[in-house]
Amino acid sequence: MTPKAAFGEGLSLVYRRTIDDEPALRERDFPGPSRYLAPPTGMTMSKLTLAEEALRRRTFAIIAHPDAGKTTLTEHILLSGGAIRAAGAVRARGENRRTRSDWMKIEKERGISVSASVMTFEHDGKMFNLLDTPGHEDFSEDTYRTLTAADCAIMVLDAAKGIEPQTLKLFEVCRLRDIPIITFINKLDREAQDPMALLDDIASRLQLDPAPIWWPAESGNRLRGMVELGTGRFQPYARKAAGEAEDPDHPAPLPLEDAARYFEAGEQEALTEALELVEGGYPSFNRQSFLEGHLTPVLWGSALRHFGIDQLLAAIGEWAPPPKVLKAQKAAPPETRNAPEPVDMAVQPGSDEVTGFVFKVQANMDPNHRDRIAMFRMASGSFKRGMKLKVQNTGKSLSVNAPIMFFASDRELAEDAYAGDVIGIPNHGVLRVGDSLSESGMIRFAGLPNFAPEILQRVRVKDPLKAKHLKKALDGLAEEGVTQLFRPEIGADFIVGAVGQLQFEVMADRLGEEYGLEVIFEPSPYAEARWIDGTPADVEDFMGKYRGQMARDIDQAPVFLAKSSWETGYVMERYPKVAFTKTRERG
Ligand SMILES: Nc1nc2c(ncn2[C@@H]2O[C@H](COP(=O)(O)OP(=O)(O)OP(=O)(O)O)[C@@H](O)[C@H]2O)c(=O)[nH]1
Ligand SMILES: [Mg+2]
Image 1 (tube, rainbow, N blue to C red):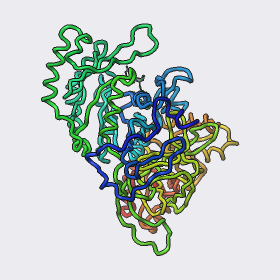
Image 2 (cartoon, rainbow, N blue to C red):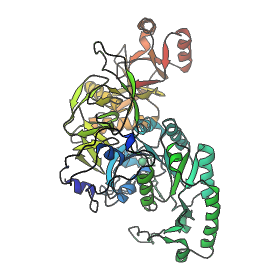
Image 3 (cartoon, rainbow, N blue to C red):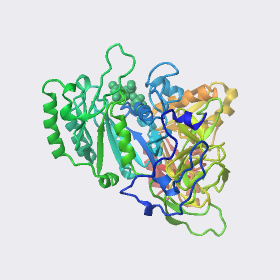
Image 4 (cartoon, helix red, strand yellow):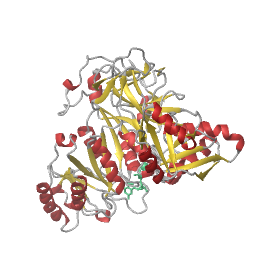
């Protein structure tokens, strides 16, 4: 398929504009020589410099409590961006109407996302990398890892429910990582809470100034549209008539005073009055304050009814930051002779060397190929297909001959990529979550954490002849982070750890679907897992005493399996020189 077809019609692939003036980040933040790039096949000559290419990228994650509408919104953003022609309804039956980001069998069957996915598209002169994340807390590790690859987050709220528990948790992760947030209040086509109550909730519970960009005119059956604050531009809402199969297009915007025909008696006046209060009562948008994480622009709409989506995409393009400067270390691979001490550094998106890190590994995306793809977030440089990259933390190197980009449901070979882009690197186990890659092999980004599981179960395969296959399959799934795998030092059991029950269900499903293995989970004698660390002598001493409860994770790191939290407390007290940790950095 040609790139043109992958993008869908109506979208120009010609780099027709230079980048907008970015008030927060300008050329000076992107040192490095200008370069003229060879024209990608089928495109006109790109005149953009490396720094300009970085500046026109927007890499953002969609986060929310389960069911707020992230995957539906993903579909409709792709539609607005011209990347697809028809949105596949979530939970719709039939092969031809399915969402792009929920591609696993279990996701399609249950209508929930269990794994983050990435989609790239070009729109209005910018390149967007969209990361759809699962909302369910059992998969929050996956969401957490994905957020390390995002420069901005779209926080989706259900207009009827406001801020929900998982929204709050994810918001805290964004705050810790200094990720600016755009708020999208979804499902206006249903009866919503009072808009002011929703904004006040954001202000009081998230300590974040909400700056409404638009204001809704009612909701549910009375939804008339929304007004842009400051300009008074009214965007009418068109309702689907009973019996109609397709949603109608929403009418073109017009000044509010000319929009009487869209309202019933008294509504327009009430709205005009409310607007005065709103414009006086809430801060207006300030980009600096947004980028610093003090303020969130608030947009409204209905993902399902494709309402407010163009406006959201325009806001992302205009306000979301370009790829950020990342903290890293310049460090030689382990076991390098006479290696100098690592030094802290900052990786500028516009600098020459290709650098980045693997934040996710996904196997079997294509069931016909049994592939294993590492999702690589680029931090800097100009990547060209065929390039050789080195893994800092293992010292290995690989030629990236078949990198892919994910365009809606299609994959394309990526000929080139820049800071902010997420490309998939097919590999057979060389790349793992947390790996840092660069041309020199000397750049190290902070690793991604594994969290101690809260449920530990023993897993067995029904057909004993397939025991060997099980080991391989479990390793694969553990490397993806579907579940964690612990191999006890004594005995032949496999102990599988997860944060939540749903992870086991996904695992059982995928073992059956992708590996043809029917498995049984059984209770294990263990309640908690802790990674242990300390001087070799102290660790050896402890391991010697507790050999029967020691295991190794997939990176061969030693793990203590405790029978109860009381036991964890007990060993921590008895072995004060050994560190028992709940997280372990990978890579
Ligand atoms: N009425 C209405 N329903 C919506 C809207 N957006 C999404 N939905 C519905 O809400 C349900 C959940 O939507 P999803 O997009 O799967 O939600 P999600 O946030 O991706 O859920 P998880 O990935 O499982 O966390 C589906 O039934 C959607 O059709 C909307 O704007 N209006
Ligand atoms: Mg989803």
